[in-house]
Length: 138
Image (cartoon, one colour):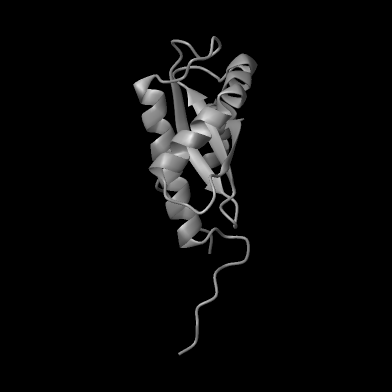
């Protein structure tokens, strides 16, 4: 039987599964409010996505604040509490090594809103034409 080859550069099923488990573990810590950092006190941080490195030793965690952008101070706070979060992830997710956590602001929602605003502009709507109709050129 021939073995299926994964698409080059695409994450493996294991990488996706472990990244999702790490996201759930981090979300649980944020939900419980266990972060003792002045820049994170009373802030609601959401982990929108986690991407794992192929060796599962590094996790890039995309974070967003509810209703606003993540501030540089909050990112610094997350970097300061990273050892605590790493310990919590190691307890929740059974891996050979506790992954190093790297935090990045999630700008996907901002980008989607920007694209939506552009698509709603009258000059763009004019170029798009009526919805549902195909261009019927012979």
